[in-house]
Length: 186
Length: 280
Ligand code: SF4
Image (cartoon, rainbow over all chains, first blue to last red; front, side, top):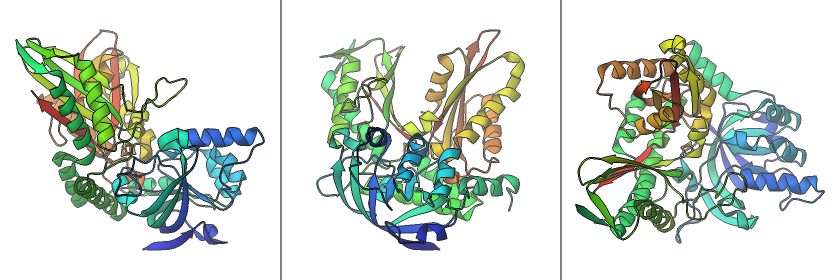
């Protein structure tokens, strides 16, 4: 069974989430991948401000395909999150509460998730056509010159994710994997 | 001497670039369906069903199945008695990629150089391998190769004492390390032998074979089957969420090598194993 949640998260919602849970998100997500992360962190290092206030927000790691004239977005599935590991802890210091991508996070990110009571969720990699149907609007709000890597504000409805790293230090990839490696015949 | 018009190649290349991204091959879809039956994890089954649904949406809405529409990789067999009229084969392929990606609303994922990293804005240059063969035909195979699985691929210069045990260990280690990052269930291409540049090419080339088809050499076919069993015991499962379907298929290609060498390359392909071809 999936848990329906509003994004940005309501107070206390993140702490209740546990690794392995399936969630359906409705509300606002911001997109950013490698180039936008690099630029955001450089801006912070120079003492500047971010183009979007990250306090309480959720970032979706995606670089969509161009939309056809009759659709709001093209294909829009998650990209590999580890490429954002170098930047994610700095953004959590700015108040970032959630990240959506696919694949492992490093120890530093997992520790930051715990420290800041945040959450890392995975969407199913390679289902960009299916996930795009859960996106009801998309607007480029910063770094337009980065093309597919620009920051977009998305409105989503029942966007499906699985909790991987919860705010209590659990890691679903490790747990799920172990289940089937140790007793593959269950 | 047969003549093929430059523009005809451009148009065909554009067409297969789009079809590769919209229409997942029947071989892959059948492998999904078969895996739904054999997968031991309920979560894994549900993910496999979503992959089937995603492929259906992509085909009916003419939208890319994955947002990473990849590096366009071509393996071309050019007959030595075939002449391209009106321009070079490389230019025709790159122009076809440009046209296909632009008109098909596909993503541009190539930067002009690895240091300054400016997007070229048309998904070129393509990676093009040309093999000169007998006859007057032209066969063009295209793959849209995503970055996620490519980044988790690996190559190692083993030496003969490592033996097949060493080769297997390297393959399993690579798949384990890739975990969810390469978007399993995977199609795994393996090149054994050759030298430092040949084995990765063999691995890439093996991925162009249809999913579900075994190698014609019974010894290699046996190795492919053995590796399938081993890899699917790792427990990684669909999307790394646990399960018995870590690989949809494993392909092995071999080549002669130096007496001192045992190179092995593992080229991972995600479940979006997108290959199309045309013949002229
Ligand atoms: S690894 Fe494959 S399925 Fe996953 S995001 Fe990349 S191209 Fe898409």
